[in-house]
Length: 205
Image (cartoon, rainbow, N blue to C red; front, side, top):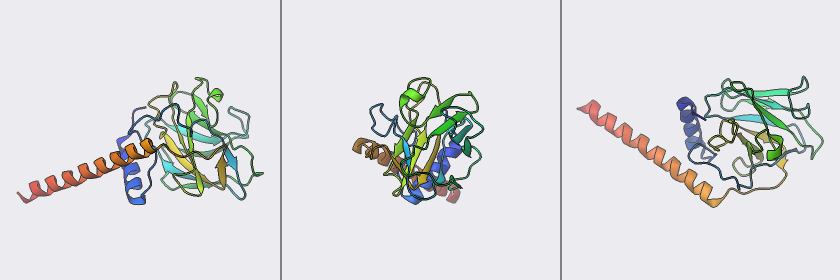
């Protein structure tokens, strides 16, 4: 969907300073990516959710879905992508190891709901959550796409990670994906350096 420039700016600074490569809107994630359609499974100990940013204009709420694939008074609110601050955490408690933690993204602007796990759980038959074990060592990263039909497939409309969790498989990002993300970061950094040099030259004149 249309991206917030402020969100992109914060996200870039976070990636540049933290040395972490995470999905951004630099390119669409292919349908065949093995990180799509995975489940998040509980491990041993409390599950701590950490907000990792967003680039969306839409207001998205993240819930731990305890009501069997839909809004329920039992559901646990975790984050709103527009209200949360980068690095915010939420303790979701402990669960029996191996239990699936089902997360639901509710898009306030459209009323749509999307779920982690297989594409068949979503009304459009498309996987809306990317689940990765590599990007944040020791944690499970999840990025959501919030548009019906798959949108731009960048899976960064709301991003977060969980401690003490695993996935239904152990996916590894495709080398081409990592390379493209790296090239994009280098290009952004270079453009910023050139902008600052030009501004400095103008100020001196």
